[in-house]
Length: 324
Image (cartoon, rainbow, N blue to C red; front, side, top):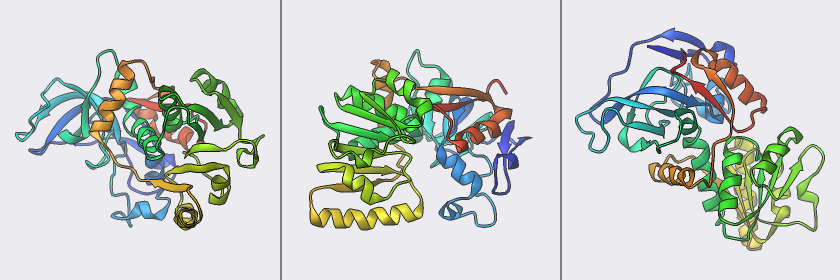
């Protein structure tokens, strides 16, 4: 089978399209013919080996020679311990807990990582969901989202942000979306009540505007700035972040807890089939729709990761594996 392989950390140029053996599923796994996959920031981090914490288990070279956690496809065969899925089922899921490998024509995954693809959803749309939409859902949940809340999403124009915006609106929240000016029209079309171009306006210095929830997808500011922008009982949720920012969050969060009612939280990535199923239902009811910026062939995966790394993507970048 064809797959995108890398053997050393670096920029997208270290990736190459190679012929590799088709995997064989274990007793507790299924074999999926991958129709589509999507790229995520975690792929970008693992590709470069930055931050260095991602090199745990792979100090001398990549632990996973084939990247790709978000996949959608059709099950070809199942192990003898599989109880719910069958050959022919169309599925999607986050396989980051199953040794990755989504940037390939076939991949093995555990049953617990996969959800049935809703009828009417394309494979490309399904591949856009697992990490980004689940992170958005979990982040808003950790932020104790309620109807009428004033929510700010920093980095709203990317994969997680576009899902978070739509989910927050489905809850009846008032959403302020922050990103580069080139993405503001998209954010308005998704229902944002207010949009902010971060290159022209600093939302943390608006004394007349405080937020019940700040979901930080593309954080680069001091934790003290975010704390200042929260309402008296507001909650800040960071999705990912560099090691220094995480350490600062822990320190500032502990201080905020002792001195008031504001909360500063870190969301850790936690794949969840239940949350994937919830996202599927939100799609079926028309409450969310994946925003797909561009589609690439498997052989063009390096180009997709390059665009992701440049921060220019509006929504998700999709790899059409079946198109080669």
